[in-house]
Amino acid sequence: MGLRGRSHSDYPVEIGSHSSAAYNGSAFDAGLHEEASWFAIHTRSRHEKMVTVQLEEKGIRAFLPTLDEVHQWSDRRKVIRQPLFSCYTFVYMAQLGKFRLAVLQTPGVIGFVGINGVGIPIPDQEIDNLKTLIAVDAPYEPYPYLRIGKRVRIVGGSLDGIDGILVAKNTDRSLVVSIELIQRSIAVRLEGYHVNTI
Image (tube, rainbow, N blue to C red; front, side, top):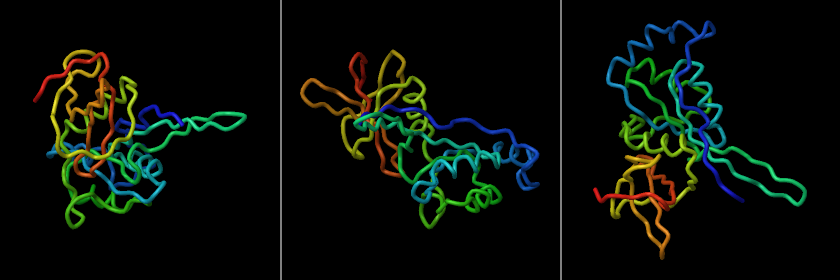
């Protein structure tokens, strides 16, 4: 089985006529003028894509990083797109009551990731790192979560500015990029890239 990363979605959806008054454009825009942040949403198993689509239909900006899994059978092979982090998707919003409720009322949503159900903002850099890896179609794969290690930043090239923890095994070097709040990581090979310690 091979792995290759691609994005499922990373864009705000215009609010259409099917939306209820609770999600009218002016209200949503006003919400984003507040301090907006990325939040992790805990979903039911295998509901990540459905939840992401429904959130976007409500006019809530959502981001679901995915991974293409290549399944090989004796007579054929098929690429199946799976969520990169099982049971999680991400939303960008101000922490306003009406929008929290809109998220929590979405079928398949368990809740915000945080303490006592209160979402904890995710640093923009962590989400930006994921987006950059996906946008340049860099070969990445899930990796055990790392909290401690030598932190470095890629300098130059298409992955310029991405930071994470350096992992080296013999001559192979990888950069481990993490979303600390949900304790999930991915690794990307550093062959051909220069890094600086940070």
